[in-house]
Length: 259
Image 1 (cartoon, rainbow, N blue to C red):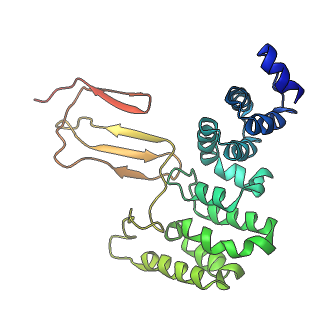
Image 2 (image 1 turned 90 degrees about the horizontal axis):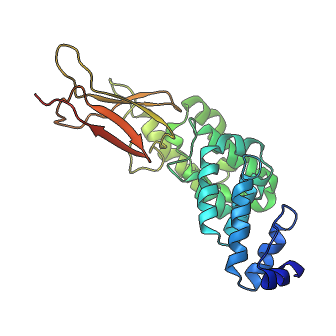
Image 3 (image 1 turned 180 degrees about the horizontal axis):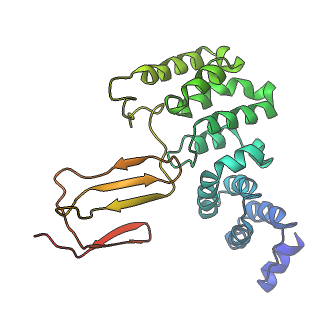
C-alpha cells in the first residue's frame, strides 16, 4: 500500500520480482490501470523459458491482455520443454491447459508430447484431475500419432480405459489410422480435430526454378516435422528470375519474366 500511495503523489514506481504480484493485487483492487501497465511491462522484460508459464498465469488472472498474448505465443512455441520440466505448468487450470493444447500453432512434431503433458498435469493432482482426461484427450491429434504408441500407450492407459467418452474418441481416431490405400496414409482432414495437422512454426519455401523451361512449383519444408509438401496453386504461371522476401510475416514476390 505504501508504494501505491507514493505513486499517487510522486508518480514514481519501482517494480521488482518481489513486489510485482502484490502491486498487481492492489492495482486491480483499486482500479489503477497505469500501475497494471507498469507491472505488465516489467513482467514482459523478465520473460524467459523458466518463468513464462508463471507469467502466463498471472497475466490471465489480472486480464493483462497484451502480456497474455505475448506469453501465450511463447508457451506454444516452447511447449515440449515447458510441459516436460516446468513446475508452473502443473499449476495451469483445466481451461488454460485446454486452451493451449487445442491450438493449431502448438509447436510439437509428435502428438505423443501432448498426451504425455496431459498425463503429467493430471498426475500432479489425480484425485481432482483424473476426470478431466475426457475433456483434454479430444484436443490431441490422435490420428497423427505413431500407431504403435497409440495402441500401447493411449488405448491401454487406465484413465482412457475407464472413460466411455475417451474410448469413443480413440475409436474415432483409429478409423483414419487404418484407412489406408495403395498410395499410403490418407490425406489429413482439416475439419477433423483428430487428424488436422499442427501449423509449423517455421517453413522453408523452394519456389520456381528452371530446368528446360521455367517452373511454377512451390514446395514447402516443415523444419519441425521434416516433410516436404507441394504448395503449388492450380494454374500457377511460371515466373523465372523473380525475387522473394519475407517482411513482417508477409511473403513478397517482385519482378520476374512471364514470357
